[in-house]
Picture 1 (cartoon, rainbow, N blue to C red):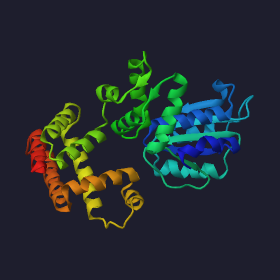
Picture 2: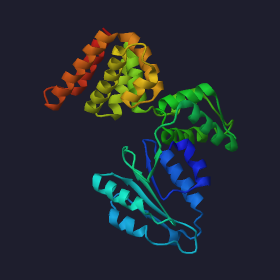
Picture 3: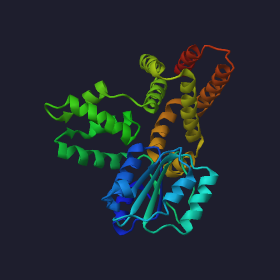
Picture 4: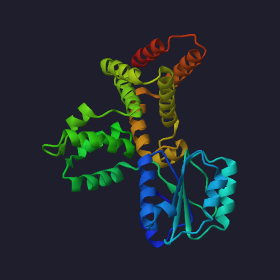
Length: 316
C-alpha cells in the first residue's frame, strides 16, 4: 500500500499488523498519527504501548495478547527496528492468528519483502506533484503563499524529502512573517541544500565546464561532509549516469528507475546530464573515482587534493 492510500484505507478497516518502511520520516510519522487517531483510544495510558528499537520482540508480541480496557482497540507501536530473519518469522507466525482487538504497527529501517497477513505501507519519497499539493494545503490555513517556482527550488534543495522540506518551511515562515510570502530568493538565501542536491549541482557544473561554480560547490561540500563519503556519493552518481548513458534510448524512464531503485524524475535529469559528458567520459570518471577511493582507503593520498584533481580532470 502506498502512503497516499493509507489514511483512506483506515475508514474501511484497521488491519491487525502494519509495517511502515521508507526513507521519509515525515511520512512514517504521519501514518502513525493517522492510525492512532483511527483507533480512537481514549485511555492511552492503558491501551497504547510504545516500544523502541531495543525492545525484545517476544515482549512486544506478548503485549499484543492483552485485550483493550474500556476502548474498542489497543495499539502497539514498535519503532525503527532492524527487521532480521528471527523477527520476521515471529511476526509472520503472530499474524496467522492475531488478536483482532489489537493493532500492531511497526516502523523499520530499510525495506522488506511481502509477508502474508501483514500490511506493508510504502513511505518512500513522494513525487513533486504530491509534495506540491501537500505543502500548499498545509500553508493555506496558516496564511502563507509560495510560488510554484520557489517550491520547485525548495523540493530540489531538500531532495524530495518532506521531513527536510517542513523543517526548512518552519524557518522560512518565521522569516516571512510580515508579508507571509515565501520567495525563491528567500529559499536560495536561507535554506540548506541536501547533500544529494549538492552532488547534482557539482555534476551539472562539471558538465557545463563552469569551473568557478564547481570549485565553490566542492568547497561547500567539504565544509560539512567527510571527503571519503563525497567520493562514494560522486561514484554512485556518476555510475548512475553511465548506466543511463549505456541504456538503449527506447527503454523508458520507469523501467530504468525501477532497476536502479530510484524515481523516474531522477532518470529524466540523468538523461540531460549524460549529454554533457558522453558515455566514454563518464566511464573514465567512474574509473578515476574508483582509483581515488582505493587510494583513500589505503591511506596513500590526501583525499581533499584528490577530489580537486578529479574536478579539474572532469572539467577538461
